[in-house]
Image 1 (spheres, one colour):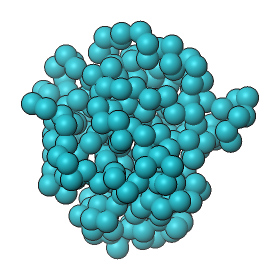
Image 2 (cartoon, rainbow, N blue to C red; image 1 turned 120 degrees about the vertical axis):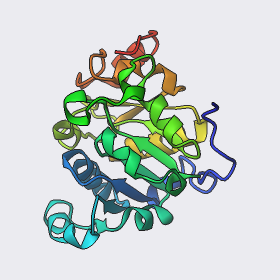
Image 3 (cartoon, rainbow, N blue to C red; image 1 turned 180 degrees about the vertical axis):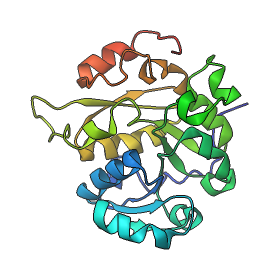
Length: 234
């Protein structure tokens, strides 16, 4: 099956140069990873909506305290006018998201497969391809981009640095669609990391648990070195 999304992909008006000042980002998942990403996006000046399972009114108090400035919404409402969607929920909950809701969207996959948490999911447990390829297959109408997944949520915010800082780290940004990778790279750069484009979801095994980049907190140069080496799926 082709992973190429339809021509209605919503990236034509959000190039790498124009996107940073105008993006509305919908974060699906209000756990520790989702809220850390949401805070980073808010700090960078983006408009952020957050959704989770259940009524968004139940999220309001938590969001006001944990991610002030974000808007709690139903998932459908959050993604309706979003320029970018972030999946930051356990993989076993993906089946609850209607693929039609993400059709035509650029979707960031921040997730990893954790059998003790997710249980046995055959498509992910097979281990014959990176997990983001499976996510792309589940949402064929979206352009899936892998990033944020190889750094810990507890490191994401404190590790941010301005451009040119000697301690600035890199984040891999992988996808099959060049425009989508460029869009997400602009977001990563504005948040406070050097983006390291990887031109295929098939080449993301080195970012997964057990891979050499996972949890390593690397510079862009170090990530580029790992990306250049063909890494088996961990």
